[in-house]
Length: 230
Image 1 (cartoon, helix red, strand yellow):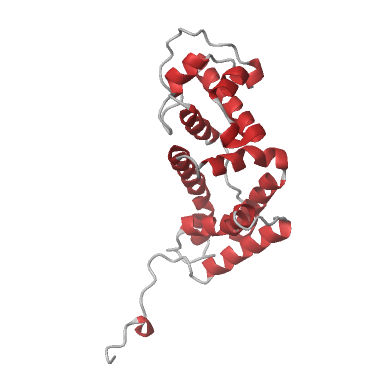
Image 2 (cartoon, one colour; image 1 turned 90 degrees about the vertical axis):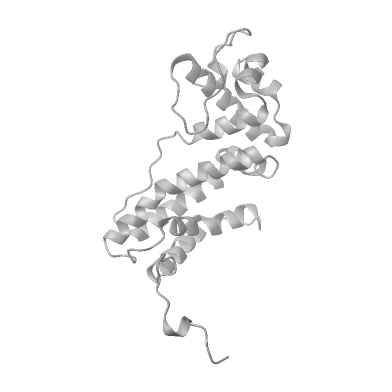
């Protein structure tokens, strides 16, 4: 359901506050209202960025009265946080190609494809930008990516079971290492990314994982011990 087709909320209807991020999702009209507000927030972020997004814009494009918006979400930050929380309910699953190399490459290519399309990238880019201006947005973004990376950790655990990487490999560190160079280019150095860069990022993370760079219980060797003669 899109913002354009959502029915308007009566000003005086008591529908309660938006649920806390990560809590059980309500259904029926409440779910439709949240979806309409989410769509309006995403559209506004894509069109105007976080600084240009207003409660008036969300009300106009969602069909939900301003009074209801303030009662349920409190303020614009509350709407942003809830929209990001709903974005995590997309049912996305990480790839399962049969090899860690294939899985990491697929993950890198998904990031590259998503941010190479200006229309697709507008809203998530604005979400990331908003995290630098709002602590609540930053916390919500952190929770979103923690959950998303958590889904991806399975590809590394499967690889460990197949013997492709050490069994004590930190799965979260590996999947973050795949996307970190891509986000560095996108949001810090402002350089383009493409399939070649995606393959490079995946290959670097794979090589490091195979070499044990992400092991969590690497035992210290004699050469690691401090020199007691000094």
